[in-house]
Length: 387
Ligand code: GLA
View 1: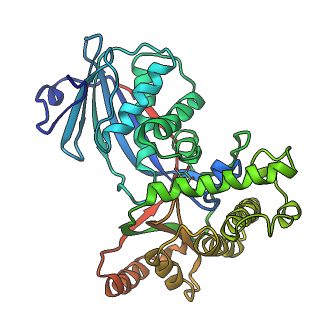
View 2: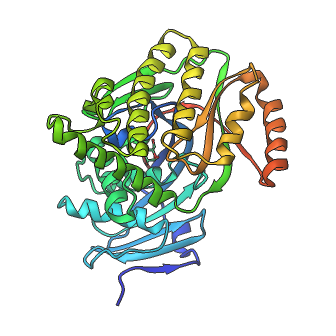
């Protein structure tokens, strides 16, 4: 008999009994530094003020676990002492985390968990990382397992790699757990050294525009980009064995491979090297308050993602292009894995309302799709409350 049983009616007792732990687990944005995390590069993300809320309580059993999502109005149950099999869709983020916790040798017991999400799925703001890290943080707190925040980050990433099958880097989980309110993290993914830079955006705000499209092969295309980078590193290693990842590669050395790497592979590498440089430059511009220069780096990042890394899509390009002649928008780019999801825009606060109306109308006229605008602020990573 299978271990995972899905149901749709909310078990009545979940409404009544008090929960012991509440976790507020945020989504993330990334200001610049895309597809660099799994290449040991730099990223510039932060958690946002939009979160998944998870409530936990022990249910006095040894192994029986019950999860219910208010958002999907669906739930599922499973036993910790039976093999953790794959479930459907969102269930796997949770089951993957449970599996990774068990793999660490930790011994949680039976629990109930109620989930409510304020994060749009598929928008590229990492609702999946929020779910994983919130689940891991909640189980850790409920059973006092003693896992550190970094262990929670890493096991949540592993859950996504091993159980969900997306070969993601560490950025989303790191940002969801480790962010500090009002700051952006300059994260070096090679050694996980993090610098927290105050997000002084002056008269500007960060506005996400959700294309509401997800192009089919998003997961497999994402994985294949990662494979291309790893294959390039293998070729480069034949001449430079000391190069462990694209992070170790200089522009000068890369040039020697102009004719030894397939043209697309070369472009991918060139993009990654340039994007790493842009992250470092952008962090400096933010520190010195040069938001216009910061914005130009965002546009350059998009250009690279569109033409060299080829992970954008017409809808994202349309939104970025639409922003170009507006002097109240300093920068715009696709955000996250790509192939759909959001653009992130650095825009003067006073203009936001008018712009949302204008760009939504233009987008609808072009694609017949409703655009969603989400205004976000840099916020605290995972917060855990004991009731
Ligand atoms: C997704 C992945 C991250 C990162 C971004 C692209 O969000 O989960 O690890 O690779 O795409 O920057």
